[in-house]
Amino acid sequence: MSKAQIRKIVTQVEETRVEMGKPIDPPTRKAVSVAVIANPFAGQYVEDLEVLMEIGAELGGLLGEKCVEALGVDPAQTESYGKAAMVGENGELEHAAAILHPRLGAPLRQAVQKGAALVPSSEKMGGVGAPLDVPLGHKDAAYVRTHFDGIEVHINDAPRANEIMVAVAVTDSGRPLPRVGGLTASEAVGEDGLR
Amino acid sequence: MPEVEVRKRIVTVEEIFHEGGERVKQPVRRAAALAIVRNPYAGRYEEDILPFMDDLKPLGLELADALITALGGDPQVVQGYGKGAIVGTGGELEHAALWHVPGGYAMREMLGDAKAIVPSTKKVGGVGTRLDIPVTHIDASYVRSHFDAMEVGVNDGPREDEILVALVMTTGARIHARVGGLQVSEIVGEDGLR
Image (cartoon, rainbow over all chains, first blue to last red; front, side):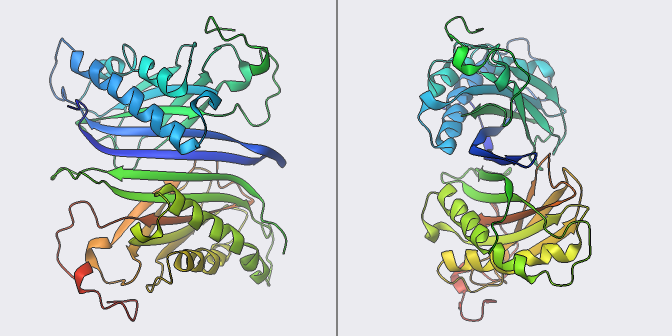
């Protein structure tokens, strides 16, 4: 039985074909999938946030798979990921944290295969239509500088006061024209999650 | 026919399970395909802009095809559609009108000669501007359950010398449609209206 009461799922793929006049071939591509769910604890202080942690586990797999499917690649071909949540005004920032941090990562890593690196994250409170910026980092080596990025999502009718927006982003590429040095994906070992 | 320069393409699919009423097993889906293209007429008044309308035709087909693919590949599931454009501030509203033919007829053709006019909207706007794209039934504009809209936009476009063009397709009525009017079962399907 699903714990998450999902009202809506929005999945988006963005591909960049030209950046500053330069063709990007193949295009860089980022997918983001967002679930709009009921906040079971809206309007009240609840000490034990276990239910939200279970919802996090459920959504990590569901949204991760939606992203990979939308990109149309093998899970092994994905390169970076990120997660974020926005709580409607009757909730508490800690509700977003309970969804994102304890259990969302493991099923997401299964969806993208491997995923040695920390999943970068952000959380906030916001009203309907507020933009949510999902941070992105390389899935196996957090220091890969070419893959530090982010993607904005925006749903005009969410989150309502008693809802939470939960977002997972997955890419098959880094920034379109990376040239600020640092560790590159080809140099990364990808075992310790950092380099 | 010069190639249209597409900087970015975005495809979004919404799956709607409920909106406070009964939860449905098969979600209603709305999909939007956006392309941010370079506006060849930005920064000046150009009398003859029709060549760009022809140039946009392959892009119309590409976006229509991307929408059908995003909805699972079967054009038969599509019940509503709409289109729109946002012109960057270096352009004029008339440039957005160039999207009517390539956007609209691409969808109608790929959906098996849909009968109804494709509803549309347009404006001039800066980077991050949002556009509410109207949606109506593909064969009969008066079907009240299918009057809908989808908001689109992208944080980094359209820049001054760009145009954001968009197409929308939906797989059903508003999730809890209940305000009467012409029903899908009552469509005659000849004049595109009823």
